[in-house]
Length: 300
Image 1: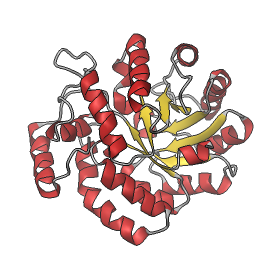
Image 2: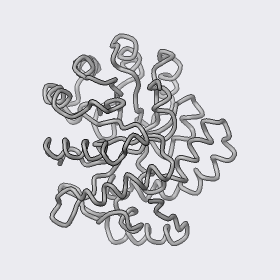
Image 3: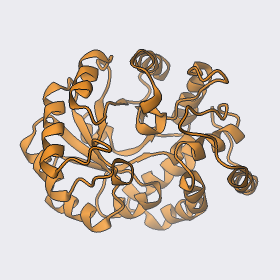
Image 4: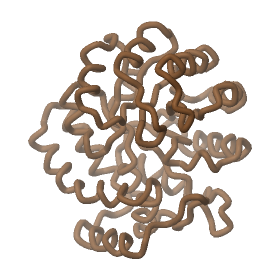
């Protein structure tokens, strides 16, 4: 299967469940893995930023990756997140993490440092040369503090052989369309914005790496499949039913929002590692009210 086929549809950026002692809750992680696969997602992203990776030690990352492969059992492809603002440390992770069975590596652009476009290019070039798997760029300026321009994306796609695609989460629709217009034919582009996925697939994107699919895998992945079949009329019914949920998921923090949803659905316990904290009581009340109306059920 080509990477273009592998990343077509819905990927889910898995949360990392924690127990009361803030150790990784592997019982809940298995439940979440089964929930999203049974819900119909096309692939899983382990250790994306939704998985609170800045707070997870390397030994824990190795354990999470191995556990995820063991429990997925080849049912869907697995993409592994490796990123940061220390290029050398990222290269060390690419050499040391168990990536043998990964379909690809997803790497968020360097955060906080605010490198120039040339710095972003050289960072990704160095990672791609070190990566044993195809590298997927991840542009999310709302978190990193620096946008990766369409020109930089297209340059990376054309000049660096092991860079195979990108997750685009700038929210800038014109930039997205410029990427789709100018990218190489075999370069895969997926949405990183749940609320914009329908519109971005209409512009030619191949799918989405989703947060919402942690809690609503069946509804969200069906919406994406309908979009990819150009049945936007049917897809809109799912999209608008989830629109209020998108706001609730992200209004205070991700993954605090999605963990609150999943706690109410009985999938995990509502623990996060500092500096993240659970959502406010007011937002939790709104989440409960939403779930009372929509009544989604865990599919695991």
